[in-house]
Length: 478
Image (cartoon, rainbow, N blue to C red; front, side, top):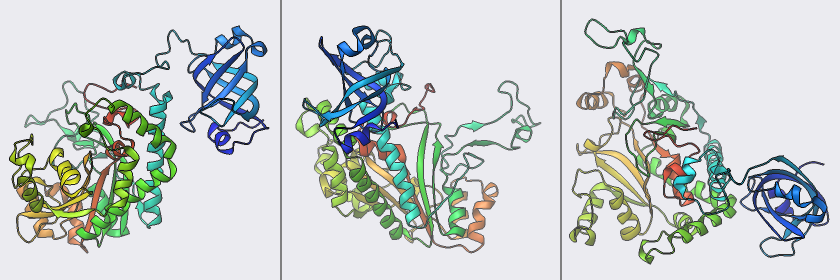
């Protein structure tokens, strides 16, 4: 008999047929005469209830069925006699694939802290919470490719090992085959990278943007979707050392085109989640409400599905950085000293400022534009005022910045001048500057941190809970 996935069995709901299902036990309860086994195979948040007759299978056999035991169950699908499910499976045959000792298996059917589950990240997929998160993560990855493919973008694989630092931040993981102790040295007392594998200093990429620009200035519209790395020693709920980025780059796009694409892209993804992940979203929404039920009402998160629909229902407000500073310095929190971080023209806005603009002032998602050039990267198009650049950040409720991007500086002389100001090595970036030497065009792009977006969609509070195996300072388990 062909195995059916539990999602198919529950969706079909066709009683009176014999089916074969396979999965892991979530819970087992029972009486002297019958055991009720909740079976899950990862295809859905919902379990299939297996009804096992004690007399038929024997007490000793059923004692070996515990949480996380793996089973193959054949039986008759019937209407459920209890509440909570429409159908259940009357087992006629049960095969145990692998036992799970309840005295040793760490993920028992009780409430575990998220920190405990991070320590057992190799097993946390088997919980309802994490199975929901990773089904949603998969759906969003699929939707990203679907969206760009439908718009004629080319998926470009940019290098993971690179000799450039796209952000100029210097927080990079070095890649080297030279010995860590007593590496070869030059006469000047520097490490002799000429003897290294690549013959020069290299690192793990912090962004695929610069290489993406090379593709866009020939293929028109490209996107990257891959891992990026930051050697930033930040042990927070918002930072990872390894994370995934989506970075589209588009020739002949100016700042407005970039903003329009970012808004359309985000709304497409959120609609896809609402259309295809509703069971998982409802589960995560209920989980969040239970977690926050003892908080004061004004400190609770917006209900998850309501929050997602809020983004779809509203046009994103377009507002300049200068206008935002005026709004913030005239706000009650500023005047009452409630902001933790300073607000003045020239500072990089913090999450508390971004959330005030979205949640309190505009009550809509916001796209901030035209930031001071001194707080932005060298490649951003310089505005005519000489003080700002054609940058944009998309701000969402509860999370602040979700997308950062800009129109890129297309003028060779202006770009070189800015690189010199910011000590970006012009000679080493000859290949990047060639796109401005030969057939330069207006072009733009943005970056969406995938995990930051999954945090928003799932309502989780810690970025380590939306990536399978988080890489953080002092943590590279599994």
